[in-house]
Length: 218
Image (cartoon, rainbow, N blue to C red):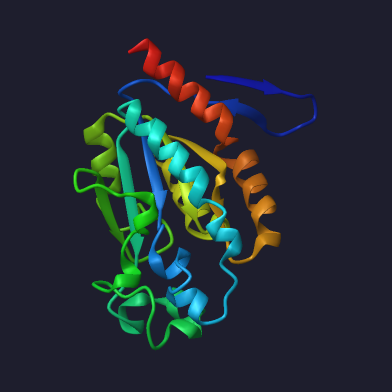
């Protein structure tokens, strides 16, 4: 781990090394309702283009993570309906009649990302993937210290989960190309907020390079 501080700047850039046996990849809510052209968000006229930008980078990252024996953890956001969906649902009236419903096609992970049965799956009902879930138990059991955080939405569940990871003394690494949002103008500010507050924010290529170095060192 390295960091560099500048005079007068109240934060330091940080680099968390990807250590074999101590690194895990969390993919936040890559579900059909968010990412598929026939999903609930797109069907309600919401532009999902910025979210879909993360699909190809995620495919590359998943390939190298699997080759490097990095555990893959998928999260899925949803509820039975408005009653147990909380304020999240009330702030999104287009979800009143459907979308992000447990047990539906829209709730499932996008097939293009090729999730596997042996991967880990976390069911979440709030923005942070740590809130009232077994994510921390899974990460502790895997021996993970550094957590690669990817998925959607940058300014919502990615930000909340990466912050909660820091609260629990994990080292969160957010990969820019592997995130996206419904409000693209908030993408860069959200990443900057994470970078100066609680996470390393890095690009895909440097991450792939480090995963390959990890693989060679095994």
